[in-house]
Image (cartoon, rainbow, N blue to C red):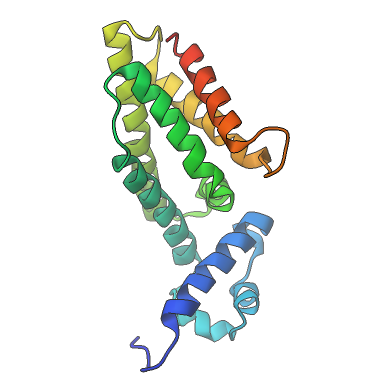
Length: 195
């Protein structure tokens, strides 16, 4: 549907996505209605359909944006020369990127079950692409003798789960700073890889 001249889609569209993300993270996708999202944004419920055809598409768009953003940011990260340095870089990147987006991380992990089959397949494909980046580092390190891992696929899944964990508990001004968490977790990953 075409928007009228003078509309505020460039303002309202991002506000709809931000409100939906916050509400899905706080209450869960199934418990949030389009009417609640509209109320949070300050528009009529019917106006939401100018920005998304339905709640499923809104959830998918939020997850897709998160995965596209993480893949784009990782691709733009300078690559280190050795597997050990690349693993350290990946761990630090993952911590930094995800600590800035706890709601997006929570929704992306906890609401996969609410995607329809086609949307689930797309998001899982993007997640596998990201996991493959880490697994390639681990495989290269194993082949060169830099790492001692029996199963690089299992290590990949374990490391990503571990590195994502701080998004659940980190609070600014807490006992550890972001930099300290980054240092500690990067070292834990290197130790676990047998570096």
